[in-house]
Length: 81
Image 1 (cartoon, rainbow, N blue to C red):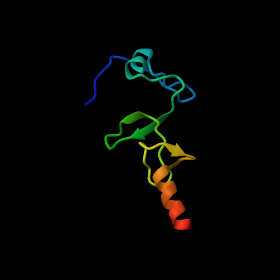
Image 2 (cartoon, one colour):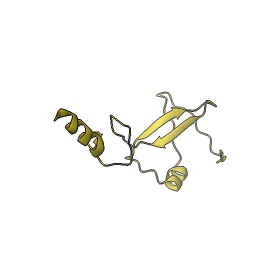
Image 3 (cartoon, helix red, strand yellow):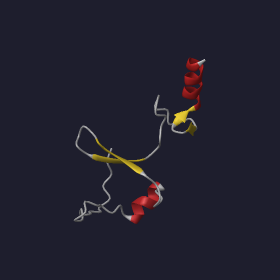
Image 4 (cartoon, one colour):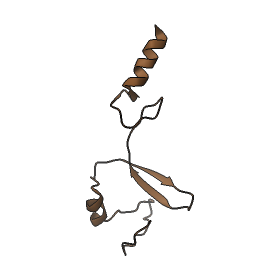
């Protein structure tokens, strides 16, 4: 469900849009964070905090070592033996 904020922003000549400070503060966005940009089936732009996942299984919950979760590392190591 979408909630109107009453805020309208224009795209600048470089294609940038400023996310208003009030929205960043409410959602806990820090200026140093990375985001992923998606377009859903209704052609709406969706911003999501970037959460890197395992390059093999896509798991975003586990701790990563060189972009690989411990479970996949163990599986790869087992196949080598």
